[in-house]
Image (cartoon, rainbow, N blue to C red):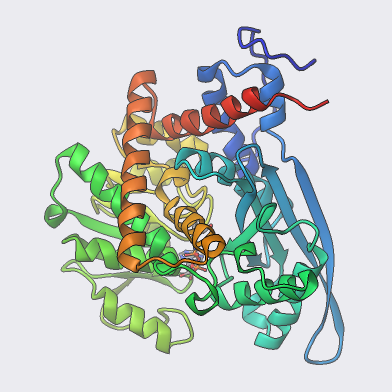
Length: 434
Ligand code: NAD
Protein backbone atom coordinates (compact mmCIF):
# COMPACT_ATOMS: atom_id res chain seq x y z
CA UNK A 1 0.00 0.00 0.00
CA UNK A 2 1.48 3.42 -0.92
CA UNK A 3 2.46 5.73 1.90
CA UNK A 4 0.09 8.60 2.59
CA UNK A 5 -0.30 11.39 5.11
CA UNK A 6 -4.05 11.33 4.70
CA UNK A 7 -5.27 10.37 8.14
CA UNK A 8 -8.78 9.85 6.78
CA UNK A 9 -7.71 7.16 4.39
CA UNK A 10 -9.60 4.06 5.51
CA UNK A 11 -7.36 1.96 7.69
CA UNK A 12 -6.63 -1.49 6.30
CA UNK A 13 -4.51 -3.30 8.78
CA UNK A 14 -3.09 -6.79 8.92
CA UNK A 15 -4.71 -9.64 7.08
CA UNK A 16 -6.26 -11.83 9.77
CA UNK A 17 -3.71 -14.52 10.52
CA UNK A 18 -3.82 -17.48 12.91
CA UNK A 19 -2.70 -16.20 16.27
CA UNK A 20 0.26 -17.90 17.88
CA UNK A 21 -0.32 -17.25 21.58
CA UNK A 22 3.24 -18.15 22.44
CA UNK A 23 4.62 -15.40 20.27
CA UNK A 24 5.13 -12.18 22.27
CA UNK A 25 5.41 -10.15 19.06
CA UNK A 26 1.87 -11.18 18.10
CA UNK A 27 0.74 -10.40 21.63
CA UNK A 28 2.08 -6.88 21.21
CA UNK A 29 0.60 -6.51 17.72
CA UNK A 30 -2.89 -7.56 18.83
CA UNK A 31 -2.99 -4.64 21.26
CA UNK A 32 -1.27 -2.33 18.77
CA UNK A 33 -3.98 -3.09 16.20
CA UNK A 34 -6.81 -2.11 18.55
CA UNK A 35 -5.09 1.17 19.44
CA UNK A 36 -4.27 1.87 15.77
CA UNK A 37 -7.95 1.54 14.86
CA UNK A 38 -9.00 3.90 17.63
CA UNK A 39 -6.42 6.42 16.42
CA UNK A 40 -7.44 5.86 12.80
CA UNK A 41 -3.73 5.61 12.12
CA UNK A 42 -3.13 5.93 8.43
CA UNK A 43 -2.08 2.65 6.82
CA UNK A 44 1.37 3.93 5.84
CA UNK A 45 2.16 4.88 9.43
CA UNK A 46 0.73 1.58 10.55
CA UNK A 47 3.01 -0.37 8.27
CA UNK A 48 6.02 1.64 9.36
CA UNK A 49 5.35 1.53 13.10
CA UNK A 50 4.54 -2.15 13.37
CA UNK A 51 7.95 -3.19 11.99
CA UNK A 52 11.34 -2.85 13.62
CA UNK A 53 13.48 -0.34 11.80
CA UNK A 54 16.63 -2.49 12.10
CA UNK A 55 17.47 -6.00 13.19
CA UNK A 56 21.05 -7.02 13.96
CA UNK A 57 21.94 -10.68 14.39
CA UNK A 58 25.46 -11.55 15.40
CA UNK A 59 27.36 -14.78 16.00
CA UNK A 60 29.37 -14.24 19.15
CA UNK A 61 32.37 -16.57 19.51
CA UNK A 62 33.59 -17.04 23.08
CA UNK A 63 36.56 -18.97 24.34
CA UNK A 64 35.16 -20.97 27.25
CA UNK A 65 37.22 -21.74 30.35
CA UNK A 66 37.82 -25.24 28.95
CA UNK A 67 39.63 -23.72 25.95
CA UNK A 68 36.86 -24.69 23.53
CA UNK A 69 35.29 -21.95 21.39
CA UNK A 70 31.51 -21.77 21.61
CA UNK A 71 29.39 -19.54 19.37
CA UNK A 72 26.33 -17.79 20.79
CA UNK A 73 23.60 -16.03 18.83
CA UNK A 74 23.10 -12.37 19.76
CA UNK A 75 20.38 -9.91 18.75
CA UNK A 76 19.86 -6.18 18.84
CA UNK A 77 16.56 -4.92 17.48
CA UNK A 78 15.97 -1.20 16.99
CA UNK A 79 12.23 -0.88 16.77
CA UNK A 80 12.02 2.88 16.30
CA UNK A 81 14.05 6.04 16.87
CA UNK A 82 11.65 8.78 15.76
CA UNK A 83 11.64 10.39 19.23
CA UNK A 84 15.36 10.04 19.95
CA UNK A 85 18.15 7.48 20.37
CA UNK A 86 16.80 3.98 20.91
CA UNK A 87 16.81 2.55 24.41
CA UNK A 88 16.35 -0.94 25.78
CA UNK A 89 17.84 -3.71 27.87
CA UNK A 90 19.89 -6.76 26.97
CA UNK A 91 18.51 -10.14 28.02
CA UNK A 92 20.59 -13.30 28.54
CA UNK A 93 18.50 -16.48 28.47
CA UNK A 94 18.66 -19.94 26.89
CA UNK A 95 15.19 -19.55 25.36
CA UNK A 96 15.40 -15.95 24.14
CA UNK A 97 14.15 -15.65 20.53
CA UNK A 98 14.34 -12.97 17.88
CA UNK A 99 10.54 -12.56 17.98
CA UNK A 100 10.65 -12.02 21.72
CA UNK A 101 13.36 -9.37 21.29
CA UNK A 102 11.29 -7.72 18.51
CA UNK A 103 8.27 -7.55 20.83
CA UNK A 104 10.33 -6.18 23.70
CA UNK A 105 11.81 -3.53 21.40
CA UNK A 106 8.32 -2.47 20.28
CA UNK A 107 7.12 -2.25 23.88
CA UNK A 108 10.10 0.03 24.62
CA UNK A 109 8.99 2.42 21.86
CA UNK A 110 5.47 2.81 23.29
CA UNK A 111 6.77 2.89 26.88
CA UNK A 112 9.24 5.72 26.25
CA UNK A 113 6.58 7.73 24.42
CA UNK A 114 4.02 7.09 27.15
CA UNK A 115 6.20 8.35 30.02
CA UNK A 116 7.49 11.17 27.85
CA UNK A 117 11.20 10.43 27.68
CA UNK A 118 12.99 11.38 24.44
CA UNK A 119 13.96 7.86 23.38
CA UNK A 120 12.93 5.32 20.81
CA UNK A 121 12.67 1.60 21.51
CA UNK A 122 15.23 -1.22 21.23
CA UNK A 123 16.10 -4.50 22.89
CA UNK A 124 18.95 -6.97 22.82
CA UNK A 125 19.38 -10.59 23.71
CA UNK A 126 21.91 -13.40 23.68
CA UNK A 127 20.89 -17.05 23.59
CA UNK A 128 22.93 -18.41 26.49
CA UNK A 129 22.46 -19.91 29.93
CA UNK A 130 24.27 -17.58 32.35
CA UNK A 131 23.70 -20.00 35.23
CA UNK A 132 26.06 -22.43 33.45
CA UNK A 133 28.74 -19.83 32.68
CA UNK A 134 31.62 -18.56 34.80
CA UNK A 135 32.03 -14.79 35.41
CA UNK A 136 35.01 -14.77 33.01
CA UNK A 137 32.97 -16.48 30.27
CA UNK A 138 30.16 -13.96 30.80
CA UNK A 139 32.65 -11.13 30.58
CA UNK A 140 34.12 -12.42 27.29
CA UNK A 141 30.60 -12.94 25.89
CA UNK A 142 29.52 -9.41 26.85
CA UNK A 143 32.67 -7.76 25.53
CA UNK A 144 32.56 -9.56 22.18
CA UNK A 145 28.82 -8.82 21.73
CA UNK A 146 29.52 -5.12 22.50
CA UNK A 147 32.48 -5.01 20.09
CA UNK A 148 30.33 -6.63 17.37
CA UNK A 149 27.67 -3.95 17.90
CA UNK A 150 30.08 -1.02 18.32
CA UNK A 151 28.62 0.75 15.28
CA UNK A 152 25.07 0.27 16.55
CA UNK A 153 25.50 1.46 20.15
CA UNK A 154 26.28 5.04 21.14
CA UNK A 155 24.98 7.73 23.53
CA UNK A 156 23.23 9.46 20.64
CA UNK A 157 22.27 6.27 18.80
CA UNK A 158 21.32 3.25 20.87
CA UNK A 159 21.73 2.87 24.62
CA UNK A 160 21.55 -0.57 26.29
CA UNK A 161 20.54 -1.33 29.89
CA UNK A 162 20.07 -4.43 32.06
CA UNK A 163 17.18 -6.86 31.62
CA UNK A 164 16.65 -10.46 32.67
CA UNK A 165 19.91 -12.05 33.86
CA UNK A 166 22.02 -8.99 33.14
CA UNK A 167 23.15 -6.56 35.82
CA UNK A 168 25.35 -3.60 36.75
CA UNK A 169 28.57 -5.59 36.25
CA UNK A 170 27.56 -6.57 32.73
CA UNK A 171 26.74 -2.93 31.97
CA UNK A 172 30.20 -1.96 33.30
CA UNK A 173 31.79 -4.37 30.75
CA UNK A 174 29.65 -2.87 27.97
CA UNK A 175 30.80 0.62 28.99
CA UNK A 176 34.45 -0.39 29.14
CA UNK A 177 34.47 -2.26 25.83
CA UNK A 178 32.65 0.51 23.99
CA UNK A 179 34.96 3.15 25.54
CA UNK A 180 38.13 1.24 24.55
CA UNK A 181 36.97 1.13 20.92
CA UNK A 182 35.84 4.79 20.99
CA UNK A 183 39.19 5.85 22.54
CA UNK A 184 37.38 7.87 25.22
CA UNK A 185 35.26 7.10 28.24
CA UNK A 186 31.62 7.14 27.17
CA UNK A 187 29.60 6.52 30.30
CA UNK A 188 26.34 7.66 28.67
CA UNK A 189 26.47 4.70 26.24
CA UNK A 190 24.78 2.44 28.77
CA UNK A 191 22.46 2.85 31.78
CA UNK A 192 21.92 0.68 34.83
CA UNK A 193 25.69 0.69 35.49
CA UNK A 194 27.31 0.99 38.92
CA UNK A 195 27.00 4.40 40.59
CA UNK A 196 30.81 4.57 40.73
CA UNK A 197 30.91 4.57 36.90
CA UNK A 198 28.25 7.24 36.38
CA UNK A 199 25.19 5.17 37.23
CA UNK A 200 22.22 6.93 38.77
CA UNK A 201 21.29 6.64 42.38
CA UNK A 202 17.92 4.91 42.57
CA UNK A 203 18.24 3.13 39.19
CA UNK A 204 18.47 -0.36 40.69
CA UNK A 205 15.16 0.08 42.54
CA UNK A 206 13.50 2.27 39.88
CA UNK A 207 11.31 -0.33 38.15
CA UNK A 208 10.00 -1.75 41.43
CA UNK A 209 9.46 1.78 42.77
CA UNK A 210 7.46 2.69 39.67
CA UNK A 211 5.36 -0.46 40.19
CA UNK A 212 4.65 0.68 43.74
CA UNK A 213 3.76 4.23 42.64
CA UNK A 214 1.20 3.16 40.03
CA UNK A 215 -0.25 0.57 42.44
CA UNK A 216 -0.86 3.35 44.96
CA UNK A 217 -2.45 5.48 42.23
CA UNK A 218 -4.74 2.57 41.25
CA UNK A 219 -5.74 1.92 44.87
CA UNK A 220 -6.70 5.57 45.22
CA UNK A 221 -8.90 5.32 42.11
CA UNK A 222 -10.63 2.23 43.51
CA UNK A 223 -10.96 3.69 47.01
CA UNK A 224 -8.75 0.99 48.59
CA UNK A 225 -6.46 1.64 51.55
CA UNK A 226 -3.02 -0.05 51.30
CA UNK A 227 -3.39 -1.37 54.84
CA UNK A 228 -6.51 -3.29 53.75
CA UNK A 229 -4.81 -4.84 50.70
CA UNK A 230 -3.01 -8.14 50.30
CA UNK A 231 -0.40 -8.58 47.55
CA UNK A 232 1.08 -11.54 45.62
CA UNK A 233 4.26 -11.08 43.57
CA UNK A 234 5.50 -13.51 40.92
CA UNK A 235 9.28 -13.21 40.46
CA UNK A 236 11.68 -12.16 43.22
CA UNK A 237 14.45 -10.55 41.17
CA UNK A 238 15.22 -6.89 40.63
CA UNK A 239 11.62 -5.82 39.90
CA UNK A 240 9.62 -8.26 42.03
CA UNK A 241 11.66 -8.06 45.23
CA UNK A 242 11.80 -4.24 45.19
CA UNK A 243 8.08 -3.97 44.41
CA UNK A 244 7.29 -6.37 47.28
CA UNK A 245 9.53 -4.43 49.67
CA UNK A 246 8.09 -1.03 48.76
CA UNK A 247 4.46 -2.19 48.77
CA UNK A 248 5.02 -3.68 52.24
CA UNK A 249 6.54 -0.34 53.30
CA UNK A 250 3.31 1.36 52.15
CA UNK A 251 1.34 -0.85 54.55
CA UNK A 252 0.20 -3.65 52.20
CA UNK A 253 0.41 -7.25 53.39
CA UNK A 254 2.55 -9.23 50.95
CA UNK A 255 1.16 -12.74 51.39
CA UNK A 256 2.99 -14.56 48.57
CA UNK A 257 6.08 -14.29 46.37
CA UNK A 258 7.68 -16.76 43.98
CA UNK A 259 10.79 -17.34 41.92
CA UNK A 260 12.06 -20.16 39.66
CA UNK A 261 12.13 -22.46 42.69
CA UNK A 262 8.38 -22.08 43.44
CA UNK A 263 5.98 -20.00 45.54
CA UNK A 264 6.12 -19.00 49.21
CA UNK A 265 2.95 -18.06 51.14
CA UNK A 266 2.13 -16.66 54.55
CA UNK A 267 -1.40 -15.46 55.25
CA UNK A 268 -0.16 -13.08 57.94
CA UNK A 269 2.41 -11.49 55.61
CA UNK A 270 5.94 -12.42 54.55
CA UNK A 271 9.07 -10.79 55.91
CA UNK A 272 10.35 -9.36 52.61
CA UNK A 273 13.60 -7.94 54.00
CA UNK A 274 14.45 -11.32 55.50
CA UNK A 275 13.69 -13.00 52.16
CA UNK A 276 15.92 -10.53 50.28
CA UNK A 277 18.79 -11.29 52.65
CA UNK A 278 18.13 -15.00 52.24
CA UNK A 279 18.35 -14.67 48.43
CA UNK A 280 21.63 -12.74 48.68
CA UNK A 281 23.15 -15.47 50.84
CA UNK A 282 21.61 -18.39 48.96
CA UNK A 283 22.98 -18.06 45.44
CA UNK A 284 20.18 -15.80 44.18
CA UNK A 285 17.08 -17.91 44.87
CA UNK A 286 14.55 -18.60 47.65
CA UNK A 287 15.22 -22.33 47.43
CA UNK A 288 14.87 -23.85 50.92
CA UNK A 289 13.33 -20.73 52.54
CA UNK A 290 11.44 -22.07 55.54
CA UNK A 291 9.38 -19.25 57.07
CA UNK A 292 6.54 -19.71 54.58
CA UNK A 293 4.22 -22.34 53.20
CA UNK A 294 5.26 -23.67 49.77
CA UNK A 295 2.75 -23.08 46.97
CA UNK A 296 2.89 -23.60 43.20
CA UNK A 297 3.29 -20.84 40.67
CA UNK A 298 -0.30 -21.36 39.51
CA UNK A 299 -1.61 -21.16 43.08
CA UNK A 300 0.16 -17.83 43.49
CA UNK A 301 -1.42 -16.44 40.34
CA UNK A 302 -4.92 -17.50 41.37
CA UNK A 303 -4.80 -16.44 45.04
CA UNK A 304 -7.42 -14.14 46.51
CA UNK A 305 -4.84 -11.38 47.01
CA UNK A 306 -6.16 -7.90 46.12
CA UNK A 307 -3.09 -7.04 44.07
CA UNK A 308 -1.18 -9.40 41.78
CA UNK A 309 2.23 -8.28 40.48
CA UNK A 310 3.57 -10.59 37.75
CA UNK A 311 7.26 -9.62 37.71
CA UNK A 312 8.99 -12.66 36.19
CA UNK A 313 8.46 -13.24 32.47
CA UNK A 314 6.03 -13.23 29.52
CA UNK A 315 2.88 -15.26 28.97
CA UNK A 316 2.01 -16.12 32.58
CA UNK A 317 -1.67 -15.11 32.75
CA UNK A 318 -3.80 -17.04 30.26
CA UNK A 319 -7.60 -17.30 30.03
CA UNK A 320 -7.87 -19.92 32.81
CA UNK A 321 -5.68 -17.99 35.25
CA UNK A 322 -7.65 -14.82 34.41
CA UNK A 323 -10.90 -16.62 35.20
CA UNK A 324 -9.60 -17.91 38.50
CA UNK A 325 -7.58 -15.03 39.88
CA UNK A 326 -9.04 -13.19 42.87
CA UNK A 327 -7.00 -10.03 42.19
CA UNK A 328 -8.72 -6.65 41.86
CA UNK A 329 -5.61 -4.97 40.49
CA UNK A 330 -2.92 -6.58 38.31
CA UNK A 331 0.30 -4.59 37.97
CA UNK A 332 2.51 -5.87 35.16
CA UNK A 333 6.05 -5.52 36.49
CA UNK A 334 7.21 -7.96 33.78
CA UNK A 335 6.92 -7.31 30.07
CA UNK A 336 4.04 -9.14 28.40
CA UNK A 337 2.90 -11.34 31.32
CA UNK A 338 -0.76 -11.34 30.20
CA UNK A 339 -1.89 -13.05 27.03
CA UNK A 340 -4.38 -11.14 24.85
CA UNK A 341 -6.96 -13.93 25.44
CA UNK A 342 -6.93 -13.01 29.15
CA UNK A 343 -7.51 -9.28 28.63
CA UNK A 344 -11.21 -9.58 27.87
CA UNK A 345 -11.86 -11.94 30.79
CA UNK A 346 -10.11 -9.57 33.19
CA UNK A 347 -11.97 -6.58 31.85
CA UNK A 348 -15.34 -8.36 32.16
CA UNK A 349 -14.47 -9.25 35.76
CA UNK A 350 -13.67 -5.58 36.47
CA UNK A 351 -10.00 -6.25 37.25
CA UNK A 352 -7.90 -3.12 36.76
CA UNK A 353 -4.81 -4.17 34.79
CA UNK A 354 -1.94 -1.67 34.84
CA UNK A 355 -0.17 -2.65 31.63
CA UNK A 356 3.56 -3.34 31.33
CA UNK A 357 4.32 -0.30 29.20
CA UNK A 358 3.04 1.85 32.07
CA UNK A 359 3.67 -0.27 35.18
CA UNK A 360 7.34 -1.07 34.57
CA UNK A 361 8.31 2.24 32.94
CA UNK A 362 10.13 3.37 36.09
CA UNK A 363 13.28 1.62 34.88
CA UNK A 364 13.56 3.50 31.62
CA UNK A 365 12.54 6.75 33.30
CA UNK A 366 15.50 6.60 35.69
CA UNK A 367 17.69 5.35 32.83
CA UNK A 368 16.78 8.62 31.14
CA UNK A 369 17.77 10.51 34.32
CA UNK A 370 21.06 8.56 34.31
CA UNK A 371 21.78 9.49 30.70
CA UNK A 372 21.00 13.17 31.44
CA UNK A 373 23.30 13.13 34.50
CA UNK A 374 26.13 11.47 32.53
CA UNK A 375 25.86 14.01 29.75
CA UNK A 376 25.86 16.92 32.19
CA UNK A 377 28.50 15.41 34.46
CA UNK A 378 26.26 16.48 37.33
CA UNK A 379 24.76 13.86 39.62
CA UNK A 380 21.53 13.99 41.56
CA UNK A 381 20.64 12.83 45.05
CA UNK A 382 18.53 9.70 45.39
CA UNK A 383 15.76 11.82 46.88
CA UNK A 384 15.67 13.99 43.74
CA UNK A 385 15.65 10.92 41.46
CA UNK A 386 12.79 9.32 43.39
CA UNK A 387 10.73 12.51 43.56
CA UNK A 388 10.97 13.05 39.80
CA UNK A 389 10.28 9.38 39.11
CA UNK A 390 7.16 9.37 41.30
CA UNK A 391 5.89 12.50 39.56
CA UNK A 392 6.41 11.13 36.05
CA UNK A 393 4.84 7.75 36.89
CA UNK A 394 1.79 9.40 38.50
CA UNK A 395 1.43 11.73 35.55
CA UNK A 396 1.63 8.86 33.02
CA UNK A 397 -0.89 6.84 35.05
CA UNK A 398 -3.37 9.74 35.24
CA UNK A 399 -3.07 10.52 31.52
CA UNK A 400 -3.43 6.87 30.47
CA UNK A 401 -6.45 6.51 32.79
CA UNK A 402 -8.04 9.60 31.25
CA UNK A 403 -7.33 8.38 27.69
CA UNK A 404 -8.87 4.99 28.51
CA UNK A 405 -11.93 6.73 29.94
CA UNK A 406 -12.33 8.98 26.89
CA UNK A 407 -12.28 6.02 24.49
CA UNK A 408 -14.11 3.66 26.85
CA UNK A 409 -11.32 1.08 26.61
CA UNK A 410 -9.05 -0.73 29.06
CA UNK A 411 -6.11 1.02 30.68
CA UNK A 412 -3.85 -1.13 28.46
CA UNK A 413 -5.41 0.15 25.27
CA UNK A 414 -5.48 3.69 26.69
CA UNK A 415 -1.71 3.45 27.31
CA UNK A 416 -1.06 2.11 23.78
CA UNK A 417 -3.18 4.89 22.29
CA UNK A 418 -1.11 7.50 24.14
CA UNK A 419 2.24 5.98 23.19
CA UNK A 420 1.40 5.32 19.54
CA UNK A 421 -0.20 8.75 19.12
CA UNK A 422 2.94 10.48 20.37
CA UNK A 423 5.22 8.55 18.00
CA UNK A 424 2.83 8.97 15.05
CA UNK A 425 2.62 12.72 15.67
CA UNK A 426 6.41 13.01 15.74
CA UNK A 427 6.58 10.98 12.53
CA UNK A 428 4.02 13.26 10.87
CA UNK A 429 6.03 16.35 11.86
CA UNK A 430 9.34 14.87 10.69
CA UNK A 431 7.89 13.46 7.47
CA UNK A 432 9.28 10.57 5.50
CA UNK A 433 12.74 11.25 4.11
CA UNK A 434 12.97 10.08 0.55
P1 NAD B 1 15.58 -10.79 37.28
O1 NAD B 1 16.38 -11.74 36.49
O2 NAD B 1 16.24 -9.90 38.28
O3 NAD B 1 14.42 -11.60 38.09
C1 NAD B 1 13.53 -12.50 37.49
C2 NAD B 1 12.84 -13.27 38.62
O4 NAD B 1 11.81 -14.09 38.06
C3 NAD B 1 13.78 -14.22 39.37
O5 NAD B 1 13.44 -14.18 40.76
C4 NAD B 1 13.45 -15.58 38.79
O6 NAD B 1 13.74 -16.64 39.68
C5 NAD B 1 11.95 -15.40 38.58
N1 NAD B 1 11.35 -16.35 37.65
C6 NAD B 1 11.80 -16.76 36.45
N2 NAD B 1 10.96 -17.66 35.92
C7 NAD B 1 9.94 -17.80 36.79
C8 NAD B 1 8.75 -18.57 36.82
N3 NAD B 1 8.45 -19.39 35.82
N4 NAD B 1 7.92 -18.46 37.91
C9 NAD B 1 8.23 -17.64 38.93
N5 NAD B 1 9.34 -16.88 38.95
C10 NAD B 1 10.18 -16.96 37.90
O7 NAD B 1 14.74 -9.95 36.21
P2 NAD B 1 14.07 -8.53 36.40
O8 NAD B 1 15.04 -7.49 35.96
O9 NAD B 1 13.44 -8.44 37.74
O10 NAD B 1 12.96 -8.61 35.25
C11 NAD B 1 11.73 -9.26 35.45
C12 NAD B 1 10.76 -8.79 34.38
O11 NAD B 1 10.63 -7.37 34.45
C13 NAD B 1 11.16 -9.09 32.94
O12 NAD B 1 9.99 -9.31 32.18
C14 NAD B 1 11.80 -7.79 32.48
O13 NAD B 1 11.75 -7.62 31.08
C15 NAD B 1 10.90 -6.80 33.19
N6 NAD B 1 11.50 -5.47 33.34
C16 NAD B 1 12.66 -5.30 34.06
C17 NAD B 1 13.17 -4.02 34.21
C18 NAD B 1 14.40 -3.75 35.04
O14 NAD B 1 14.73 -2.57 35.24
N7 NAD B 1 15.07 -4.77 35.57
C19 NAD B 1 12.52 -2.92 33.63
C20 NAD B 1 11.33 -3.14 32.92
C21 NAD B 1 10.83 -4.42 32.80
